[in-house]
Length: 199
Image 1 (cartoon, one colour):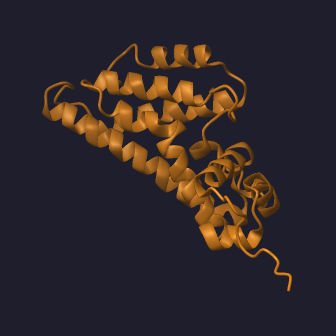
Image 2: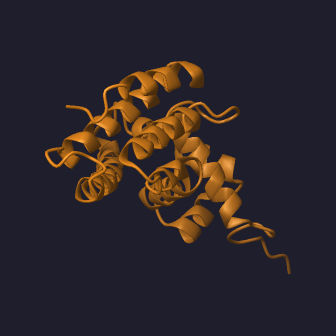
Image 3: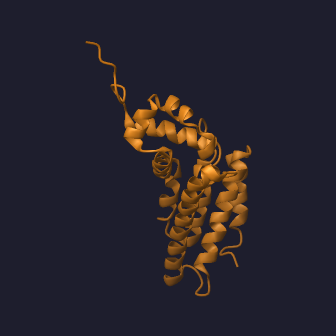
């Protein structure tokens, strides 16, 4: 009796497959990444994709988490810097580096992933908006600590400073996707921080 293989192939590496899915979403965006693109890159069938990761939205969320822990890890590292200015410097420098890594898609999965998304991409657009808002909240909380510690002036607005830094980082991602180099983007980041804290 011959039995066909059902499910994932032998030697299936869920982490390696998730990494490949992340790359597809990063390069093509949520809507641009078809199930065929994803399953071919991951080396699994659609049935296996659903069994291992859930639907496309679930896979996208897991890929975004993978991105946050990998190329996007500069965010949590930057938050550990001793001063608010160093937080902003590390955040923007990390953004410039992560968005221009050789051999990886240019730009940021969290910014590029749902740009120009239509109705079918609404979930991804919402997930990414929440993800970016969370990053901004982390910056705001860190800048609030800096105000309380006297590192930033008492009248400084942590929310406004966080929005400023996040907006520069998002612009860095868009510029990187358009071909800007890490050096060019670092110059922009340096210029953005010349007058610190932003008024």
